[in-house]
Amino acid sequence: MSVPRPSAVLLAATAAAALGALAGCGKDEPPKASAQTQVREVVRRYGVAVSRKDYQQICDRLIAKALADNVEEIGLPCELAFKRGLENVRGAGLRIDGIDVRGTSAYVKVHTTAAGQPPSDDTLKLVRVGTGWRISSLSAAPPKPPAKKPPAKKPAK
Image (cartoon, rainbow, N blue to C red; front, side, top):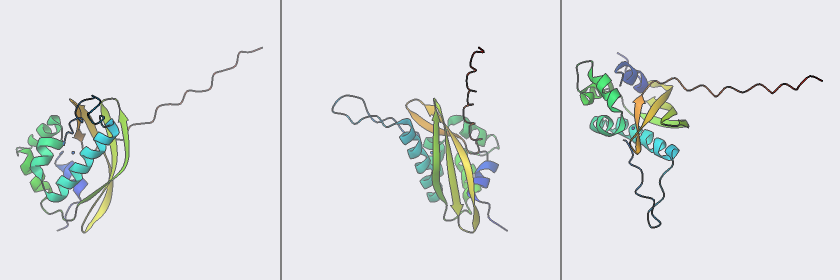
């Protein structure tokens, strides 16, 4: 029996930690991290949590409540759904290949690997929650680039 690759398991279950913004903006306090930096950190932490099989971290701090609720619709608590989906995955790895922040949404292209499984390229969607970010979809379609405006017509002479 072959072991499903991490992204397939996560997608089948319909299943990174919301980062609080760095404290304050006073002159003695560190500057607030950019949205892109916050998003990158959430996805990095998600990859670490998957590799460590830290399902509590994934469900409590990394995914959006709507995604956790969606996972639980199959009749299992979020942590148990992730455990069942990922229990046979070994050597999971996640690489971030691109981040596109658009207002309160962010799309992250990731490349995942696991022992004995083909690599997979996917897009995670994150949403802003309070002052941080959470993963809202493990299989989002990448956003389309903005349409280019045609050049303005010159008036006829």
